[in-house]
Image (cartoon, rainbow, N blue to C red; front, side, top):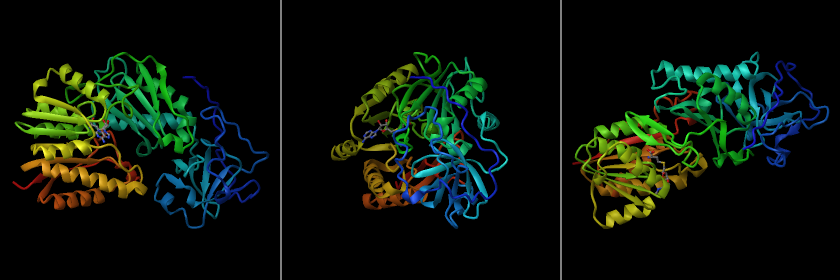
Length: 454
Ligand code: SAH
């Protein structure tokens, strides 16, 4: 990976009030989102326009409502015009149709035209700004007495989401800690511009042995960013581990999914452990064995775990060994869950506790209908495989499916499966994944624990 030095981004501090200079304005409607497609990404990007007007985003008349409610995204449909010749990653002031200041935001030539950094006109978006936002994200974890408030060398393998993007005031930046390794995931042009600054600050405040970058999720292409996967600072230790409620998990930072591990399910996994004693457990979409290990430690009679990834299943089995758990009670199946559930139904297999934790079926609301069919399908089959009095732990991590809709889908699945069920728990991501009140999209993970009638 090439380490790129990025020049200090242009950060206009005090734009002229009510800039009404329409020279060099770009009508959004006439501008292709691909206008900057051929520019080198991540490299210093000089302003290209000649004698531009003050770079600025102006919203259409009356389209500032969501910004006034402090939602941090500005969609292209709300933008009247973009002044000057900004390039993706530039910090621009956002103004209403009357020219009044609304926010500082990072511009991107994508469907989300800008993501807000700050609502305060006097705030400069500079290194100090990022230091202060990162420090307050770390302080939140410390104040909540979450494990490992301070990371750094010698930290005992604790796992923690240190920065949760929009909800920590840093749109597009996720940082997960696995012991003394930090994994950084950048999903926006704005953070991309400040990547080295953020890495330097994390190094300074957390002193990890390694900062690894996993900026390789497909959503980056929507922001016009290239995919990147590699060491940013330090050296990646051969063995990365995370300890969670006393259980140890090996984490494949470079090739695992997302940043390597699903920290968001930490507390929900612990709940499963308390309910697993003497049960036949089925864990669908088991990844590296998260729920399976908790169920085994909780005294489950048997645990069948299914995932489509052979690598994940291998790591899961090593994790069972690592914790000295009884492998004879664990069965692993590499299969497509949709097909495997049907097979289990046809074999008339029954379980007392079933976990369904599928990947994101609906990244946005546009995919909701198709996703709903997927959720209904697996949950219907799940209900059918449960013995009377059995428990279903069912999750959705789709941002495009609301909690309400998810509950309706599950109700439909129970109805079609011919079972009566009660909700006994509403579950969410752990506290190191806070949700900004003005950004409900941050509440992407929802779960229900249901008990079917005995
Ligand atoms: N419950 C896990 C996280 C699940 S992530 C934990 O606690 O860590 C989703 C998992 O679903 C991934 O491991 C992925 O490999 C798997 N997956 C995705 N589609 C699948 C399918 N159709 N059948 C089986 N597994 C699938």
